[in-house]
Image 1 (cartoon, helix red, strand yellow):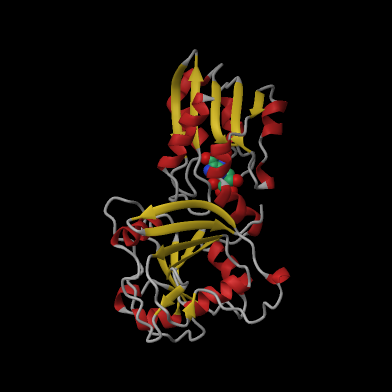
Image 2 (cartoon, rainbow, N blue to C red):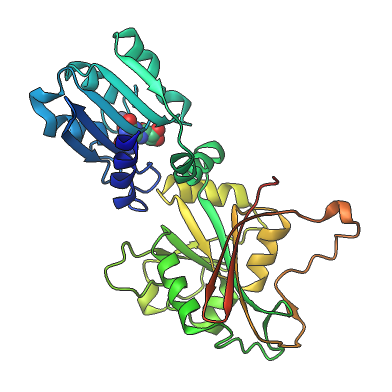
Amino acid sequence: MKYLYNALQLAKFVEHQTSTNPAVGCVIVNNGKIVGMGAHLIKGEHHAEVHALKQAGLSASGATLFVTLEPCSHHGKTPPCTQAIIDGGVKEVIYAHRDPNSLVHGHHVLEEANIKTTHMPLAEIELFYHQFDITISKQRPYITIKTAMSIDGKMHLDNFDSSWITSESSRKDVHQLRHQYDAIAVGANTYHYDKPRLNARLDDYGQQPLPIIFTNQPRDILNDQHQHAILVGQYGLNPTTALSDLYNQDISSILIEGGPTLINQLLTQRLFDELIVYIAPKLLGSRHTIYENPHITSMEDIQHLTLFSTEQFESDIKLTYRNEVE
Ligand code: AOF
Ligand code: ZN
């Protein structure tokens, strides 16, 4: 089991850089020694097992291979890992997470080649693949809505001023969050009025997300700094197609940062996987709450979310919810 955790560490090194592919780590052990290690670095390139097998060389023969995800048995952008494992002479395979991609179930192929194959699910690794599982089953990016509000649930004053509601540490945390997403999205109004820079500003923290602007005016003029942004039609028109298009452009996760119209639409359509709310110890007393839905008239219509984590940044509270009912 220790080796599966080692493999998980390798996968964590490359988390958020493999696009719509999963982050995977692999460790090969022979006679109680690690003889090969590998991770899937970039979509389209070698899988974790192949890197580890290359490093192990002849020492893979008779070894046990530990991998965070079930080895693939299909020809995708790369040849099947099961064949490389068989060719390397590996004696035993222990994998943690079942690949949700049904094309890819490699355990049968390994068993048929007389390789002892064990599925050993571990809670931490199941959690690690939560996003990947959702994107495979829904064939769309993982969607997180992030918002900040006062204790009375308000996003900004009635004159739309929303500057500095949350603390500096919360804002720093948002930058860290942005580095974890393939894209950051806002609606057209927020783009025009708030002029967000739509980037992550922590040194050495990882990838820069791609800006996305949801707009029903495709002629919206982009700022010079956002010439590479993607413009997509307003969600209300055809959310499913817009999102699957983004997924097919290799965007596996989107952080939605506003404004109220876009967030309301997504909340109303229940088109999100995670909701992150920073609550600042302030009372704004304005009219603009984070969610308004006049169609909800009975308690049976309200949405229930699952609290996933709570954190504190100075005097702000960060609540992370998942859109799943316990
Ligand atoms: C593995 N090891 O390291 C990864 C796997 O297009 P391809 O060939 O890169 O295949 C992508 C699919 O392979 C992906 O959707 C997932 O099911 C699996 N990823 N499998 O054995 C790896 N990254
Ligand atoms: Zn593979």
